[in-house]
Image 1 (cartoon, rainbow, N blue to C red):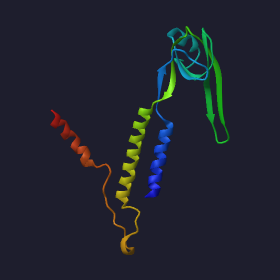
Image 2 (cartoon, rainbow, N blue to C red; image 1 turned 60 degrees about the vertical axis):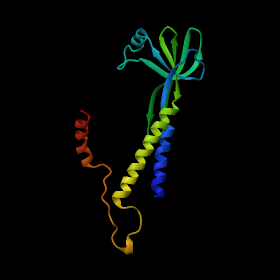
Image 3 (cartoon, helix red, strand yellow; image 1 turned 90 degrees about the vertical axis):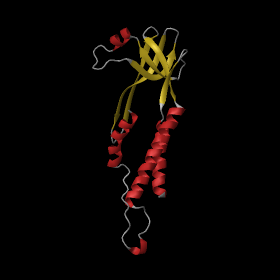
Image 4 (cartoon, one colour; image 1 turned 180 degrees about the vertical axis):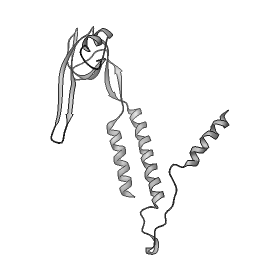
Length: 170
């Protein structure tokens, strides 16, 4: 049981580390900020010429800010193999007239907490469901066969009851 609890904690920790992010508008961008620059329509068309997919925005880190331009360090390509990971980055210079909005990426504590609680509860329910289906990890009584309790986590009777709830609301 302790091993299952440790697995639940590890799964929950992974989701906490992943986090939920939000983008908030920035009025004065500064060097080192992780931002998303949404392009104007004309700039998006001009920068997308000759490409398969349109470029509507750039996500990156600000490396230089001037009154009339913004330079972003953006991810161009990423390749992962068994031997090495390759990351190609480029610096893109955007005129302020090309940028519609600049938004800063920040973690959303409320969304992250809500998501983590939901994932933790789901992981706990699955572990408890598996534990009740298998009958636990205790030793069988008197060296005999273990008692198997068949309590499904999800049952068909619950799905059959759903249409009845629709009629009760009408």
